Image 1 (spheres, helix red, strand yellow):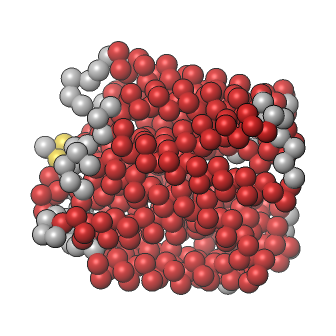
Image 2 (cartoon, one colour):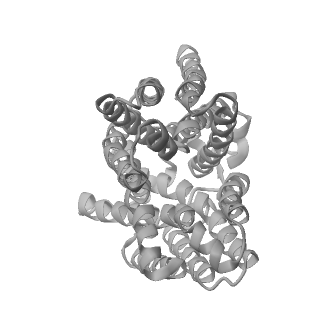
Length: 400
């Protein structure tokens, strides 16, 4: 993956060990950030009771977070791309610490909404800059693996952060969960300040072009569209996976959480495979995992009643689902090499757009055709993404 001109400023002495620790810290920060984003889903019932509001109203803070990321991420990332990385990462973690404190002491839905809106502004900035910095810290030809290691924070949060946070809410209350996140955010922010090297931000203009110049490149916009389609396909079915397991697969309600945890744990392999494949053939990796994703989703729904087939299908689905996270991120960053931070943030916005569209599309599908239709509906979107990827392979860019 091409890196910015600041890559050469990264210290190389004792390089592998130092950069490994730094990337690990970014992965832990990613874990905190994603847990902060999704933890509230498991807290909604107790939160709604405590604040005396409906579940539907409480759920709107989830929508607020996702669409804030989508709408403001690219602009803020472009505006902050020049900021020195160590300072930026530390400030972002401090913002998450403060916002989690505010959430913990919220007395009404409006205060809670502010506590969710503020970190949503910082999340895409973190992903844009962390992904780019991971590539800078990595050895030549290893940037995909480095970004995948940071993305382990996403997988770990989805596998362990949200379930453990929900359990913690039962033990210490929903406010206690946010207090814990605030403390850990502060701790990692301090480690960022102590351990991370000073890394110059991206120049405001590269090769005489402003960061936003990539928005005038049809090839880059096609890469962003591909991410929207991929995430729409992924979340058309994944949003309702718990319902699929319980209603179609006959999994007892008390065991669904463990099945979801297993789904994510298997997906860790996909994270490694996606990171390994994306550097050399980003679009080829997209094609491979879109095919596996579609096959897994279709089979999981179609053969949900047959336990062995369900497990095999979920393994394929989980691997492809998790692999597509780093593949989409690195692929878009490669396409927007002259403004990698903005490109990475645009991919995060595209992902959030896909998450929202997938949930809407899947919900409409269930209403019109039943839960049994989700496999084919999600795979249909995956096929659209596959067609776009194949067309882009057929018409390669003059410069990668």
